[in-house]
Image 1: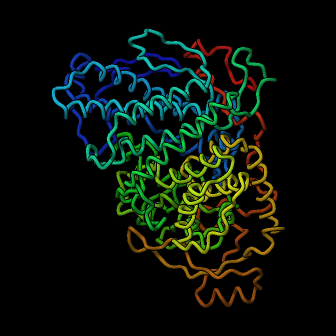
Image 2 (image 1 turned 180 degrees about the vertical axis):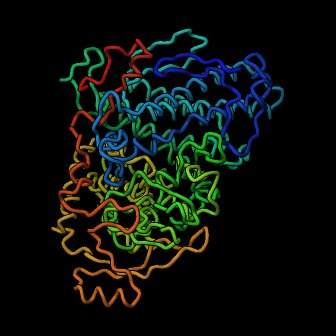
Image 3 (image 1 turned 135 degrees about the vertical axis):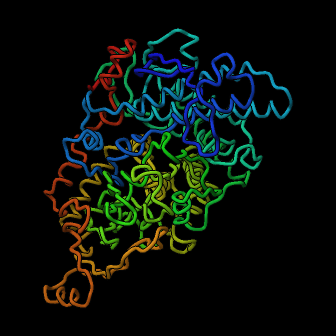
Length: 607
């Protein structure tokens, strides 16, 4: 049966929606009528249905859309009156704040709380049955922790419960210190690790479910957020004067959290089941064509009509004309123009991460100008099919990759030891070397001091995890969101004016226009010849020879964001609402407070 309740922070929540239609393609589920709350935990087969259903509320498209834009990598391409553009540019109002992620995460938490209680009451019939119960329990502990992380990293101190509302009968709650929540998440993940099998045990066949491997990785992520910076205020007074970006006050606990993160990553590394693929490109070609590998440790399943939530490849992909063989792909987000130039020459991740072309109606590849580059990791022409629909491309969401474990390990060791150890450098260099196609001679010198290595990690995560919905809150947990974005806007102005580091960039690029002829297109980037200057006569000659001449600071042939000038809207509007010690944490939407009286009087103090 399905029982819906109003709970702490969301309008409605299905307390026992335990049939939960799931996007998971590996498991068929029975109809609602086949079980009820009394019989649902009577055996592990039915209990597994509950746990699989919990995964349906572990991801939400806002996480890759509104809440992932507004960084040095990603910008909104929608109009300035659009709420998604406003949130992406830190123009927060109590009416435009996203609520779907907040609601979905709490729904998943409630499902997990119900499942934990149900699993605790189960009696195993054999050793194998007990192992299955343990695994299922480990999964829901991990789900609960990951969901709380996804709320806290955007909203800070929020209501916290580990009991089902049907049991407590409590439907209102107030803010709880994020430090308490993070510590609870750490404890949940530590329990999950004890209970979960390694992936090699074969108890699950897909990275769409937690294993010990991925629980360790998410533990490291939680610990780094818990130890890091965030916008904080006095929870007793809610005084605007108390608002500041800071770490938690307990320095000893901060140190311990860095140790927890390092140990978690080391456990995965030492176990040896996960590894980087030799090619960064292959990581995303596999993702798009639904192939699993040892680098991908946790994915959110996207297949078919049910809960195909992220729409990856449509809103956050490349532009493909509706008449093209690939069907319409209409991105509402794009690469911040300076991002392409942040990559060092020879870094293979640049042209995979940033797509420099669009697909026209005749399937021709038209190069993008600087203002119109799009997200390349989920490109529709790399798929083997259109998918369920143009806005449901059946592309899984990459929640955790092994490269993240390596870089978190490097970061945690640097923080714990106040400087990089040999192990930290080796982990960092492993990721960076793969980025340069395996050529260690191209990666440059790894810094040996704390600040230099910390900055190297900050940069490397930009190159490695572009458009994977980590950057915005990574910058916040490092305490540099305002500073980094302010610097990015100034860089964008210099790019538009072709001054300083951008003085010698290409003013024109000349290329041969080809057409795509198949799915799983081999092209990564269009070859071109760059020109700092080009006369009208030379341009005409090149065009007559069959080449296309594109003015790189001008408009794009497809999906144009217009010319890139210092006074263009895409420049002047970028980060227009940015305010230090204010926007690093989102306020709560009015609708969230309206359904939870416990939050009244507890709004973000700057709002």
